[in-house]
Image 1 (cartoon, rainbow, N blue to C red):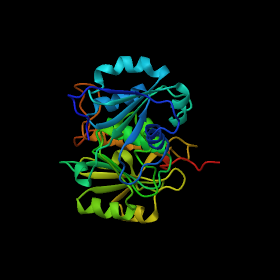
Image 2: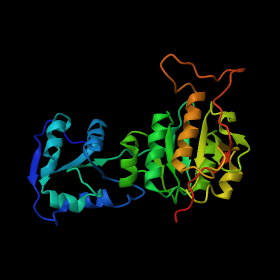
Image 3: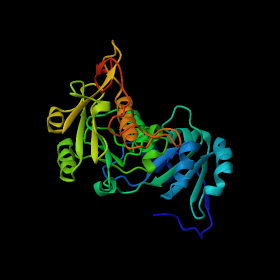
Image 4: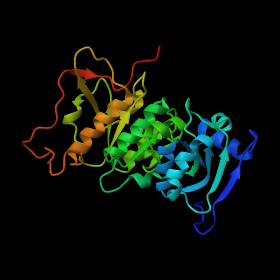
Length: 304
């Protein structure tokens, strides 16, 4: 619940590692959220600023001695009534999930999204199956917002979009873009089909090059794991399988890069990218963006 605007800020000094607020920050900043995430933690001045501007509910702001300079810059965004906790750099480091903590963190209450929130007039949904790296998931969410997708679904087995590393990699996009997590890929496939979305599976064996796919209408793009690609049932159940051609010798693309390329192509076809006044070549007789070379797998190679 958002903090009241008519109440004066509450300022407290935290001196104990066992303080209940430090425990809450530690859990929010270091642990994977549950399927129904309550408060999540954002750390660092940039993410805290994004969260303060988001209009979301906030529980508490934690500021280390070294983070006072960030609080001074952001104080105009801090709502009245928000609990402001001050602590030492040592105690702040004990709750932070980064190697070089920047001294400021915020507990924020994410929105509870539904599938319907992603389904507008011409939805463009990204569905993730087995994308386990939270950095990739966050980067995909960032690309999805940048290329005007309507939402991201991280199926069961993928990293949670609200995991601390996902939030950082998204640079705050996950606080704004609708996202869902925890449902099986098979159920998501069926639900998207029920809503009339054409589903594209990104795969090394795709029959269509990405620029030849038609992303104009309601559609979903499936991205598979960094090592194994998409589950066979998703490849079989999709309406079409697409590939990204690359130069010779490139066997695979990182999952986030593959998603960004496909999202760019979808946005280009829909007229959502380009310089001001520039028209996207989507009409009959005009040539789409082309890639030269051979097809590539839509995932990163296995880690060694």
